[in-house]
Length: 632
Ligand SMILES: [Cu+2]
Image (cartoon, rainbow, N blue to C red):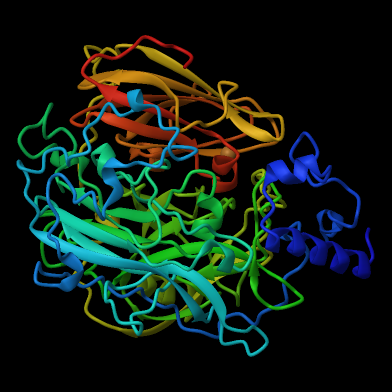
């Protein structure tokens, strides 16, 4: 074990390297980085890596200061206000071929800026299907620094600087918040979101974060030009228009003209996706929720599927973990750690271990693991009787309502996954005799490589939110115990043998040379690895090639269904369409894809954002004629 002095010295030296803005190549040349990508154990650079005595969930940078839990109410992100074309932020008005003088959509800064290989732009820079689905709703967001963000009212922790999204106003008082405002949209009502890059210059980043950004709308079926992919970042002083058709998948193929209602999504999130820097940028605050409604999932418990009414009883829950520098009390990030980053300070909706006063009735919570690297196994815990096992319901996976609710006592969630759950606080109060129940993460994870799969005892994990149950109020929402039916799952090659995959592709996820590879290669913006055939179906096989690592793998453009995990059928909560597949140790998973509608390039990547940045990602494309690369 290093001494306290050695730890402090290492921290100081590392911060100096960060402040000096030295890149990995410079550090390597200076002999400070090993070929495996780790800081060499000299000059007091890596002592923190050995200070791992902070207990379960500890970081490998040292221990954050202890922060009193349950001091602050759970913040509910404000709903992003809609704008009209008369708003100055929307002048000039969005158009099908964006205004390239300001909007760089057709001047994409592919890797190395100016080294862009022109053959890589198979899609069009104009918005696909814009004339079919002209925009009806407009939003504006400005990405800014907020130097006065409070993650807790604990007086020992100072105000933090976050980089995040504001509510669209140009006035300085419209500050950025993390998580960002919630964007609410409805199916069949197309939207344009204009995002301005008003971030500070790079040398004012306080140690991490880059002010070149790309905003991905996670899991929406978007054209490549509006997907916010890793290589489509834009710069300070610019804006970028994102157009979303708000049609379900299949609108130009299997289910014209509006897509398959069974593929309606509910809980999405938007986040920065800048290649090589997504972890630090999302960690710095650039992420928020986007919720979609339709004629079934209406947001009103008096209609449709009768799910709890939004926003009063339908609550987004943004979970992430942080490291706090014990010397200065500020959020820190280790840009020299390739394995991943787990913090020992737990946040929900931007506050440290908040509380929420709820009524005794049913609520819908939209739980998001916002990373960067932690997996959770979430339970409900009665702090006054740890022996109780408290059930609740999973109703949606990755934004897809399940065919029917599934009762659980816990669920596992990896980075970027979403689980919508229903908690009946009236039932908990009466059945378990408690007015307090806590959402607790009981999955032991010691470092960024992945969880241990060890489940801690109740009360020994990390509390994420404390619910304080108040008065009973009318509840018009559906009781999940009555087994309501939501959407049906589209067919796969398992459920309908006439649905034959055109090709099976294999993807191996491994470690190499201090980084992370897919089929032995690193991410490159200048390389498209394979081509799927638009309006065809494929089977993909994901193999985790390590016994020490877990990877939450995310694919853009289309969702998949799990055919099997190590030959076994998926669990009831994973019998769903999904956009993230968490690969357990050495696991092999087969999934079924249907590729439709859009043409263009999209990424496949690990959503442990530190793995993603080092460089477990590839680009593929969707075109009218696909290729036959089985191990791309
Ligand atoms: Cu990974």
